[in-house]
Amino acid sequence: MDYDVKEIKLAKEGLLRIEWANQNMPVLNNIRKRFAEETPLKGIRLAACLHVTTETASLMQTLKAGGAKIALCASNPLSTQDDVAASLVKNDKISVFAIKGEDNETYYKHINSALDIKPQYTMDDGADLVSTIHSERTELIKNVRGGTEETTTGIIRLKSMAANGVLQYPIIAVNDAKTKHLFDNRYGTGQSTIDGIIRATNRLLAGSNFVVCGYGWCGKGLALRAKGMGANVIITEIDPTAALEAVMEGFRVMPIRQAARIGDFFCTVTGNINVIRKEHFKIMKDGAIVANSGHFNVELDLNGLESITKSRKEIRPLVEEHVLENGNRINILGDGRLINLASAEGHPSSVMDMSFANQALSIEYMVKSKKRFENDVYPVPEEIDNAIAREKLSSMKVKIDTLTAEQKKYLASWSMGT
Image (cartoon, rainbow, N blue to C red; front, side, top):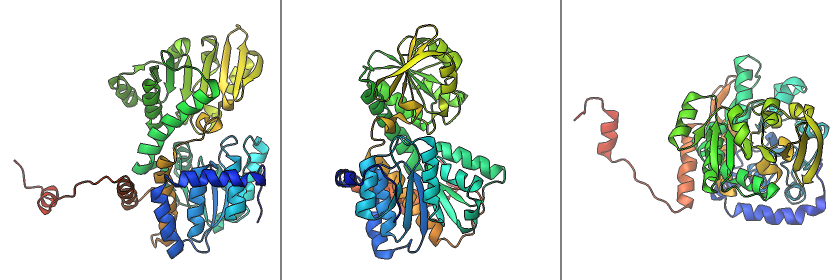
């Protein structure tokens, strides 16, 4: 078994952390038990490019229980938990290629190492795996039957590929499942991003101006949590409906150029490029703290910042202070990468339980389905989404009503009125 992790001796600590996460992932635990009995993925080769965290480890254990042969690499250079990677190798005999802090060259080397398994299915978080197959490892395409994608950023890339006729195999958009984005993106991103910013800076949020760039589900969750910490939350948006929603929720909404002058904290969650640019860094307050919780660090124009930086230093772990030509200091957290994983532990296991249940069941669906998939991006089947929600409610000991026969008849009828 091939692998590349920081230190295999860390496996003992990783095992305990995985065990702790598993205690709060009842839906995935039940899927794992069924997979172990039925082995629906027997003989399947699967390459996964995900954040290598405790929750991801639980997913990998589930897929292996289902009979899959797995190779796992990191979907972000700073998101790997090295002890978890070691545990997966030593205790679960899963090939892992991931080291926290790996450089760009090693990052793509690891992606290619995972692809050496010659996968029949891919599982992606940002679409770097799919992109590499389509650009550098085209010889693998003939083997690939389908894949899944976890993030908003990845879905944007894949839909672009499909629209341009480039995508060569079908993908299920796990991110778009209701039991994923309504909970993982909102509550997971909200809590873990605040956690990451506070761990990195140890600064007080109460009374500060906290600028959230983007009011999608991740931005909504982050704004909610920042407000709960006592911050004055400012939203920047390009979508008029999202901006209107933010106003109705009680947040101030303004262009980033206006917000740049008054913000104390900034965090991008848009999935787009150069959201905070050189002209915005130039007018920020002395001591402004800038982070990103979108998938790629391209949301911050770091090259533009570098061009106006007089000197820089790491003033705290994962906090780089840029002294600008005007004398102001701008603090960039975690190299502009996902701050909730760079300096914290990512989303809590209870929300990842649903996200990774979607991953496992979507792969099973593609493997078992007799449907002919086109080379396109597909939604998670509604029956899977609803089954996960029911299972989660059951694990929380929450019961809900069911429709009566009369109610079903009424909803199916067009003739019954007042």
